Image 1: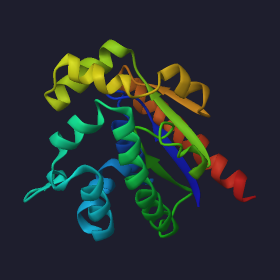
Image 2: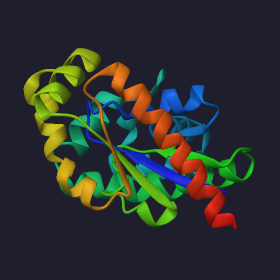
Image 3: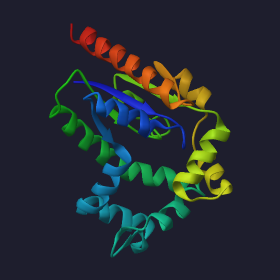
Image 4: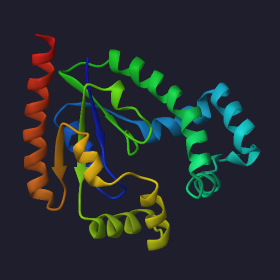
Amino acid sequence: MYKVGITGGIGSGKSYVCSILGELGVAVYDSDSRAKELMLSSAELREALMSRFGCEVFTAEGVNRAYLAERVFSSEEELRALNAIVHPAVMADFDRWAEEQEGEYVVLESAILFEAHLEDRVDCVVVVMAPEELRLERAMRRDGASKEQIESRMRNQITDEERADRSKYAIVNIDAEELREDVEQLHRRLSYDAVAQRD
């Protein structure tokens, strides 16, 4: 199965791009939501997280996201430790899932594809980009977070320029109507790439 990684900075609209691909019949693996599910369903993962970050990682409702975010977004070392625990489990789950899908290709949606060194686990990378001010505005509105909180998260991610340099395709998400056309064109290209690799 041909695997496509879709990434982009916070507020870039990569989830929206993935939702359009989903409407076009492409199977999309949301690594962020699957990571949260695995944190709850995998006893091994829960143990590793509590061992590294303390029992406060989990509450009766599930993963204590505020506590975890506070720990990892203020420390590069803590973020690396979290990724080293969670990413191997997520990628093993993704590989299993990908084998069960049909269609020309599947998508791995990951905000930190490059930061987590996952680009080697896919055949092709697409970056979704948008101007920083627009990304800030979107993320603040979506998360109900302050400008400072979003800027702090942005600092933990690489720049759009670096993502673009390391990606095969780039999509700019400013206008919703134009974006849909661009994604439909991208879908045709990715389908062609997938068939070409098989042949």
